Amino acid sequence: MSASQVGVAAAVAFVATIAFAVVAERVGFGDAADGARKTQRRAVPPVGGVAILLAWLATGVPGTDAARALPAWFASPASVTTALCAALVVGVVDDARRAGLSPRAKLAGQLVAGLLLAWPTWSALPALEAAGWSALGALAAAVACNVWNTWDHADGTAAGLAGVGFAAVASPACGAVLGFLPWNLLLRRAGEPRAYLGDGGSHLLGVAVLVEPAAWPLAVLPALDLVRVVAVRIAAGHAPWAGDRRHLAHVLQRRGFGPLAVAAIAVALGLLPLAFAR
Image (tube, rainbow, N blue to C red):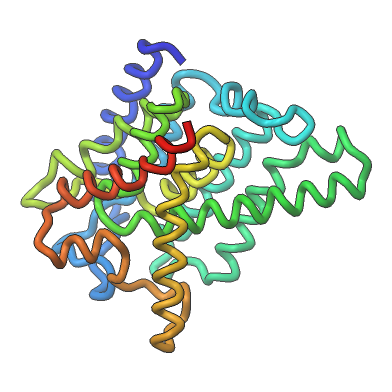
């Protein structure tokens, strides 16, 4: 992707985010405080994922570039784009439902996104091999979506790491992600974000990282943080998927770091595996 395309994607994401946020606020679509994880005073529109995908689409079919990094028998531009859209839809539905999707329903949606990603295997490989690779694609998508969904536990952690990491590996998704970031981290209202990435956005980022092998090291820190938090929850007798404030960014917040500092530290630490892998 050229510098001009990155700029266009960033501009589209920037404008689309605030436009969607204004509409979402008018119709009452927002992520309110829940006492356990989110402490903001007002409902924040979780529109980042939709804005990011729209901006990515504005510069071409997302799967066209992403599929080049994967074997042609495993994924195609159409299957990558379909998987990205499916992951986004699962997250948006989860955001839109007052109680969210059940863990089982959300997992089912994530697995479907992975199956759509690996759909070309059914025409390129014998049935048994295609089934195996499809199962692997489904599992990988579910893991990726959950890793990035749980890493989206503070402003700028998920979008910041993904956006900067995508830029480092020259992924076409970088402009769209970075264009959203200011409304989440910098251009705040009364100290609070104007928009959230939302489950739609975190699911989208999970699949976007999955289809870009050069970006896989970006998932190391989020995955380690998830494993640590799940272990602590289980030890405390809580469900592994129950939300709380035990993540890395929450630890930094309790030590007095502000949103920008927390995001910067999380992104810097998250980029280390990528630096060592290159």
